[in-house]
Amino acid sequence: MSKAKHISETPATQFLRQHGVAFGEHPYDYVDHGGTGESARQLGVPEHDVIKTLVMEDERAQPLIVLMHGDCSVSTKNLARQIGCKSVQPCKPEVAQRHSGFMVGGTSPFGTRKKLPVYVEASALALERIYINGGRRGYLVSIAPQVLTDLLGAKPVECALPD
Image: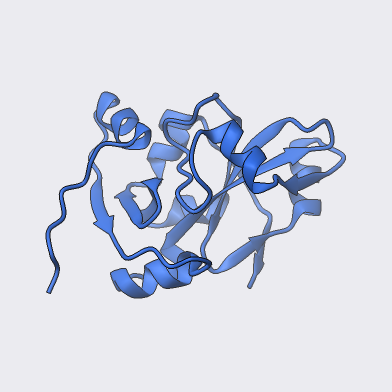
């Protein structure tokens, strides 16, 4: 029994529509600290296909976005080495929100407040469809992963650690 909810535009969906990207809309009941496991369970999709948007920063406090499988974590050492930085670490929630313009838990790589460099775990690009935050807590969009490289210029990296 799915109740059809009207979904209002977010900066992310506006960005996708402006660029003519076809996407599916997948609202779910947001659970604090439920993460990708919770959204995948509610939507009935593999957690590996749910891509989390992580706002991180390098040693100079320059922000960047890392897109990672829901069932993996980021090896910050491997990431830093691959992107030519000394170190990379997650931003504090309030800093992440300032850079992206999105609330933590609702961060999308599309329609961010500032244009940020985007890195994507290379194996995510091999998936048929990915589920990624649509710019609001409790709301994922499904898209072809090529959209990440085509629209965001996302650079493939290999820094996944199994959770």
